[in-house]
Each structure stands twice: as structure tokens, then as C-alpha cells.
Amino acid sequence: MHRRAFTGSLLSLIVAAPAMAQSGSAPTIPEEALIQPVVLADILKKGNPPPLLQVGFSVMYTEAHIPGSIYAGPTGTEAGIEKLKIAVQGFDKAKPVVIYCGCCPWVRCPNVAGAYKTLTGLGFTQIQVLYIADNFGADWADKGYPVAHG
Amino acid sequence: MADRFAALLLLFAFVLPVSVSPAQAASAPAPVMVGSPAPPFTRPGLDGKPVALKSYRGKVVLVDFWASWCPPCIIEIPQLIGLQKKHAGQLQVIGVSMDDDAASARDVAGRFPFNYPLLMGDAKFGHLYGGILGLPSAFLIGRDGRIVKILRGELKPGELDRAIQSALSS
Image 1 (tube, rainbow over the protein chains, first blue to last red):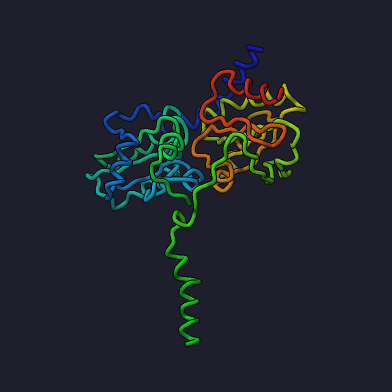
Image 2 (cartoon, rainbow over the protein chains, first blue to last red; image 1 turned 45 degrees about the vertical axis):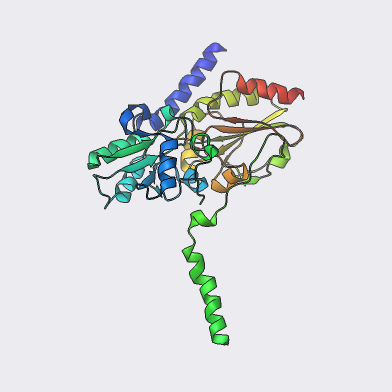
């Protein structure tokens, strides 16, 4: 029974591995690049926020996203990376840009690391990554921060 | 006068809707809570057969929202297959993929010996269940069709087993 459970878990990890491997892991993002939800919510409240990019999955974006954010993902895939590159064309690379996902727990997120790496490679110098510990629901919507649907 | 009315009608019919962004047009989902009736649904499964929640009335049902890109969801699949097998006849697991495309869900479907139906979800389906704003998420539904537990995030060891046992014995 234990062997069967172990085999099942191993199989699951093998199946899940591509999603984790494509973009690296969120914890590799430098701590100084992270922005906490409460800080971003305060910036939004004051108005005139930096450009916001949701780099996760379109179903999740349609369900709920930060008002004013642009969909540019999923950056765990090559197609999503290309979408992100197109989305940031014309952005001032010396000015802040915020990226976020929130599909799953931070340590499991398949998207934010790829987005961060891509923007760094494009020459962006003030990338801020919204730190979502568990998911967009628990760490943003449930806290009462602004959400748009559609 | 009639021309002016017609022009106004055209304005309302075509111009104004375009100025409303999808984000503004869509509304927040109604909350789904423990104790409330599980929102009914009927959707085609990945195998083409319809999956209707109401057809499982009398059984304990676990509606599991997952996606191919969600590592903890994938890791939990063998556990769900095991629970479906263990409680066959009393429990029905239904997997709802929140993938952006069916191909990704089918790819996972081909890698595991699924013994429960899989169907495609979307934002509308997520809204039906109060908003699925993170995965994994699961709703355990009692024999009476009411939600008995909502599980959000990675399962803790034994958490789902205990919840199912409790639902089966009540």
C-alpha cells in the first residue's frame, strides 16, 4: 500500500514537473523585488498606479483580477512569454511595473518567475512582483482589496 | 422627431455597450457557503458524456477544481482516484479543469487511470461556485445536496479522508 502510494506520488510529481520547470520557481525572485498586497492596495487607493500585468491563466483573470491590470500570460509557457513581451512594448523600462499571478501557492507558481526573468532580460529595472502566499482569492480578494471581473 | 428617436435608439444599441469594458460588465459572484445547496450544473465531460450534479443525489460528491498547471492539484489526483475506488457507490468525485484549453486537461487525463468524470470549467463555472480564485479548491457535497465542506489550497494529510468519512456517516 505504501509502495503504491509512493508510486502514485512519484508519478504525480513527474506529471507536474513540466509546469514547475518551464519558468523556474517563484522563490528565486529576489526579495527586494517583491511587493506585499497591502502595499499595492494602498498604491491603488492613492491612484495613478504603475502598469499592472496578470501573468497567470486567462480563466483566472476572467474570474477576477486587479482593476486596470492587463492580461499577459501564462508566462509558464513560451506562448505566454511572447504575449508578455508584446504587452510591455512601449513601456518605460526605467519605471516600475507590477506583475502578479496568484493561481496557486507562491512556491508552486509556474508563472511569476518566468515573467520576472523575461522582464529583467528586456532591461526593465523596477520590476515589482506581487507576493501572493496562497492564492489570489485568499491574499487579495478576501482581504477586501479591489477586484474586477470579466 | 422619429429620426431623433431612431438615432438615440441606435446610440443605446451599439455605441454605449462598446464603451462598457468586460470588467465593468461582469459582476461579482454570489458567495457559496457551507450549508447552502450546491449549485447545480450539467456539462459535457471530457469523454463526451454529460456530467450532471443532480444525477449523483444520494451520494456524497466531491467537486474538485484542478488544472494541469497546478502542481498540488496533480499531486492530489492519485489520492482522489484512491478515494473514489475506496468509497465506490457512496462517493462521487467530479474533476473540473480550470485550464484555458481542453487539450491541456486531456493531456493529464491520459496520464492517470481516472475512475471519475472530468469536465471543463471556465470563469462562468467558477462564478457559479462563488469564484475559484486559486487552486486546488474542492467542494464536498452531502447526500442531501448541501455543501458540507469547502477545501481551499493544498490538502493537509488526512484532511480530505476525515471530511469524506464524516460526510458518509452523517
